[in-house]
Image 1 (cartoon, rainbow, N blue to C red):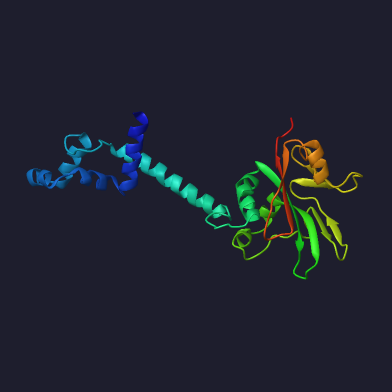
Image 2 (tube, rainbow, N blue to C red):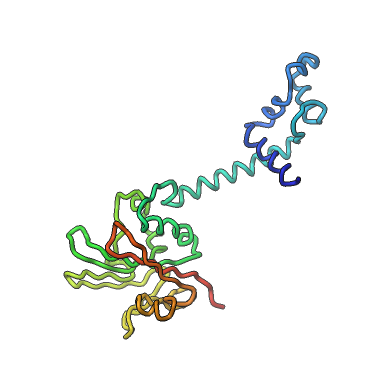
Amino acid sequence: MEDESAGAVDNIVTQFHTYEDFLDSQITPLDLYYLEDEELARQLVELGYRGSGEVLKREEFETRKAAAEASRLSKRSQQKTLASAGKELKDNFLKALAEREEANRSGKMTSIIFIRDRNSLGQEISGYIDYSHRLKTEAFEPYFSGKKRLLPRPTDLSFYNWETQAYASNPSTNYRVIADNPTGLLFKNKKDRKILNVDPKASKEAASPGDNSSRTSIPSDLYIQVAFYDHITRRTT
């Protein structure tokens, strides 16, 4: 019953722009005929002597109205922050990217994206991208809109051009690169110091690429090969 009452109040503050509008909705033409004073009629409604609807005090109305407006602005702010908000995403990769956006922006998750495809020159390239780092350093709206394709760069965690054999690796905001490991490329999370092994064979053998981590291969029409390495950060004491 309490939830229903609160819901009724929320509907009222959403429906009426001002408290006066709410009071006026409770006043009938007959009330005005007998009282001959609109302000008096409003006071009687507020006191519960007139009107057939919910009795609601001005203070509660204005408090609920302010809360509703704050909630609306918060949702609008979030939509502006998330580059994927409101986009019609058809490819599996873009959908997976959107699903991880909020968590990577907030720090709940740090995802590494492996992409293998061809650059604008037709050369095959591959690399590992720190998704959270990229979100903080560039606009992602063009990627979700389909105006640009997300590709690894020589400034990312790892980059390799299969034709020129050019190779580069760089630390990011979240990860340090361990390139001299005999078993393959490793990434060390700077926050909890957990190791992420991006070798697909190692992931299968160990059931996961590392503690609090998972590997997800994504079939995509936009790229030759895509995989997400998602790490849930847990601070060490």
